[in-house]
Image (cartoon, rainbow, N blue to C red; front, side):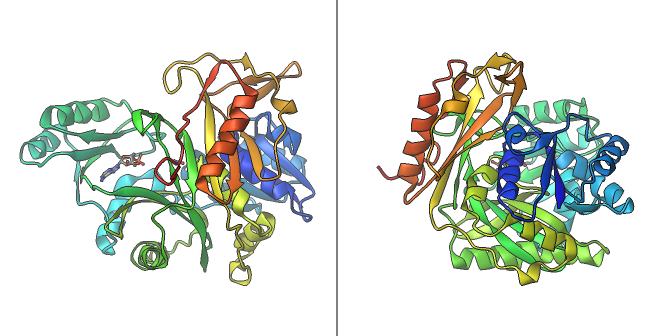
Amino acid sequence: MNIAIIGSGGREHALCFKLSESQNVKKIFCIPGNAGTEKIAKNININFNDFKELKKVILKNKIEMVIIGPEKPLVDGIVDYLEKNNILVFGPNKIASQLEGSKTFTKELCKKNNIPSAKFEIFYKSLDAKKFLKKSKYPLVIKADGLASGKGVYICENESSGQTAIDEIFNGKFGKAEKLLIEEFLQGEEMSFFIISDGKTFKTFQTAQDHKRVGEGDTGKNTGGMGAYSPSRLINSDLEKKIINKIIQPTLKSLNNIGCSYKGFLYAGLMIVNNEPYLIEYNVRMGDPECQTIIPRLKTDLFEIILSCCNGSLKNIILEWDSKFSVSIVLCSKGYPDKYQKNIKIDGLENLIHSKDQFIFHAGTNRKNNEIVATGGRVLNFTSLSESFYSCQKESLKLINNLDWNNGFFRKDIGFKVIKK
Ligand code: AMP
Ligand code: GLY
């Protein structure tokens, strides 16, 4: 089959790599892809948010199945559009994508179905939200409603930082805002929990933990993710049962009740408090960089899994996983998450020697005049599988140090909570 992957990050390169291992995949197209996907797929540089243009490219290249990586096209209804045009597509439709696209949609769904999550209030007016701050306990969490690329969440220690958050959100810092949420602050440890679903059944798709802060020891500004490890140190069969029974199943059932079935990856961002799960947020896709740490552990043919989701036959598939641990470290452009230079050459990448348990996934890279250049803040992911988290980290660090890119920086402590030296 000819297939296409929409997106250009490390997540998409990891998916592309795994799909390329399948005997039943004839040709892969990556739209738009990066310098890494280019080696295993044909990159097509169009704006995938222009659905009509995308359809033309799909038909012209005889693409038979489309896999959607990032959230924006999902929230904008790419699945509904392609399905209407009889194109096989993997991802949730526009209604189901509200789980990520609208925080208030998800919070209301949690409330209605007794899904454990932080207590919350929705505010439409700045004055009302500020009045609420006066009688609140701190810290508390203030969130813009829509997609905000991982931003738009404020942890407020006092009333005055709460007032600033409310002003910034209602003044449109994260796009037009009609409403915001104020939430109780949950104290615990975070975990990313994944499932894959065909709309009728679902299978768990591993756990991971990412490091969102730019600095060592989880300090400094929030980023798209500086690295991840899998599995999460928190998961155990008792906790997994609770997550499925209290969070995942009621969510999918509630979508069914409004006539909507969930097809695609679903990523539950959880806070674990004393072995009890609370939902912080849903994402309607794989995580990035969690995907780059989970996918190398998958032993089953990813193409067969995704095809079975499109055909509604996931129940017939058994997912097998490598028991090794996994750590993925992100190499970033100096200056990220603030200003950084673009189009800086990366020498030596293609000569870097690595073992079969090591993977280099590209994110913000491009090929220009036969050279690889960095085009983004997060540039490359170095993943290692091994018998311990300690050796995973050591191997990934060794590989990054061998590259020795002088415009780059990375965290040396990814996985520090699970690494016992
Ligand atoms: P989000 O963009 O929704 O993932 O939120 C960003 C980060 O804010 C999360 O990864 C959590 O660390 C934190 N966060 C969000 N909501 C809460 C909450 N109710 N309690 C504690 N931390 C939270
Ligand atoms: N790892 C965070 C995200 O994918 O949203």
